[in-house]
Amino acid sequence: MKRIRSGIFDRSLAEDKLLENFINSGMGAYQTYFVYNSFSSEAPTKKLISYLKGEGKRVFLPRVEGKEMVAVLDTGDFFLSDYGIEEPRGEEYAGEIDLCILPMLAVDGQGNRLGYGGGYYDRFLSRRRCVKIAYGYDCQVVKLVPSEETDIAADGILTEERFVIIKETKR
Image 1 (cartoon, rainbow, N blue to C red):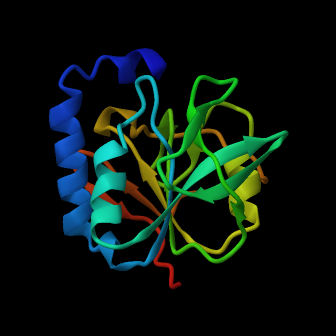
Image 2: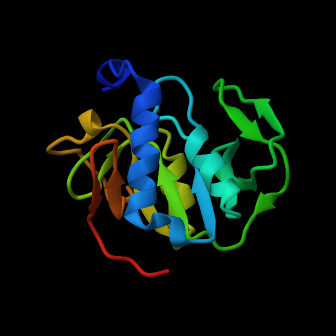
């Protein structure tokens, strides 16, 4: 899946389409967002984060602390993690988050996500009540992703080609 995802050549165009689909989806109506800080060949989130902040939304980014992941307000102050990801400096945010934008290697029609195997997002989401959107490229939507009892499924899928609601959720 990493190799397939790396085959996306025009990332800027794909990022523009992702943002356009996000805006058209109605997902911009919330006030607080948790968005992964993209790196490598992940679907880029920089324009999404910039758009949300420009709309006056509160955007939180992940920071890994040991085996856990915490939400930190995006103030633009970052450090490079051991994984090579820019992570935010600042205090952990324990309040409510309306919508979580989730990275993935793959996702299926039931919202089962294939991640990197660390379980960080599953542990984080098990402590939160939020709308969960798998965010990536259309080529990452597959027929079946194996899942376990501890895996937290996405409520929707947003790609450069489509927005699919899997499970209606209310915040």
